[in-house]
Image 1 (tube, rainbow, N blue to C red):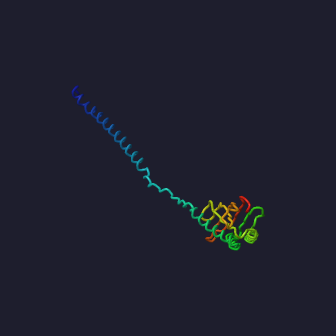
Image 2 (tube, one colour):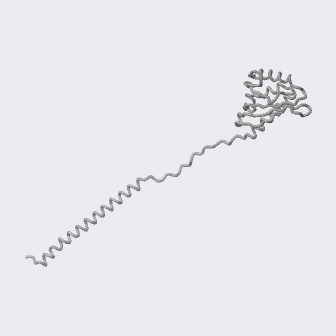
Image 3 (spheres, rainbow, N blue to C red):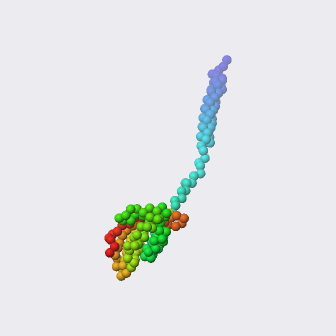
Length: 195
């Protein structure tokens, strides 16, 4: 027969068992929890991609702006040669400043299309000019780029004494062909008629 003390002792192992089982169960649950937590964290961090190296921004080379001061100087040099040829009554040299497909529009007459028509118009105009009058052209401004430019200019004619006897203005479209500036279109008109 069991006594109360032995019952306590007999119960002790089962109580301790229960306590140990509970502790083991808690420990196992904690181990399971921590194990699952570790697996989840490992999965999360191992699935993330490594940060990529920054991609350099695509470089787009912007072309240098055209040197319009240079273009203006080149066209003014041609205008100086044009004035020299005009003053020498050299129509052939002037026609050389035009492209083959050029169009010239002078006041009070139809358009001159092509070099032959332009030369005829120049020769008719020269026949009316006084020999002691000298013309000059001033390039006021140019717009465009190194291959095509629009010129705005003014014309001045002086007599032998230096008195201004005529002024006018013009616009010319220039195009560089085979490295040479040529007039492809021009138009002019008078400020006042020549005296």
